[in-house]
Amino acid sequence: TCGFVAIVGRPNVGKSTLMNRILGQKVSITSRRPQTTRHQVMGIKTEGEAQFIYVDTPGIHILGRDRNKAINRFMNQAATQALRDVDCVVFIVDRTRWTEEDQVVLTRLEHVEAPVILAVNKVDRLEDKSTLLPWLAEVGARREFAAIIPISAKHGTNVPELEEEVAKHL
Ligand code: GDP
Ligand code: MG
Image 1 (cartoon, rainbow, N blue to C red):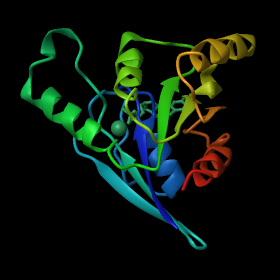
Image 2 (tube, rainbow, N blue to C red; image 1 turned 45 degrees about the vertical axis):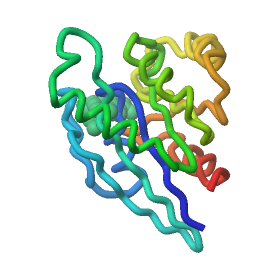
Image 3 (tube, rainbow, N blue to C red; image 1 turned 180 degrees about the horizontal axis):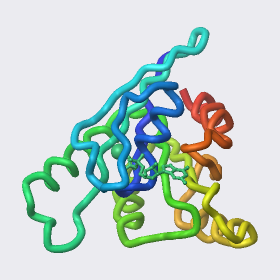
C-alpha cells in the first residue's frame, strides 16, 4: 500500500518539525519565523509493505492586509493543491490556543473527504495539563475528526501513535 498524507495547519504550529520527526531527518526547514516553508516539501517513509508520502504544506496565510500579496496567493494555492487526492490529513494546532487562522484552515478542510486527524502539538509546553481535556472536547466538536492526538513533535511524544492512526487510513 501507498498513501498520501498532508500535514496542514497555520504557520508556526510545528508542521515541519513533525515531518522531520516522522521521517527521522531534516527534510523541512523549521523556524521560529512563520512562512519558512514556501514550497511543498515531500518525504517518503517506507515501513514494511507500506509507503507513506508526507507533504508538508506551506502555512495558510490569508488574513490581514497582506492577503493579496502574490506570495500569499501562491502559498494558499500550494496548500489547497496538497489536499486533493490525499488519503489522510493531519491538521496541527498549538496546544490550548485556537486562532482565527486555525479557523481558516478548518474551513478549508470542509470539502476534504479524506479523514482528518487533529494533532494538538507542543503539549510539552502546556503549563496546566488540566486545561487540555476540556479544550480537546471543544475543538473536537468543530468537525468530525478521525482521531484527536496530543503530541510533541519536538520531543517525539505520541508521534508513533499518530503514525499508527495515519496507517489505518491508507
Ligand atoms: P511550521 O511553520 O508549522 O512548519 O512550524 P515549525 O515546524 O517550523 O515550528 C515552529 C516553531 O515551533 C519552531 O521554533 C519549533 O522548534 C517549535 N516547535 C515545533 N514543535 C514543537 C513542540 O512539539 N514543542 C515545542 N516546545 N516547540 C515546538
Ligand atoms: Mg514549515
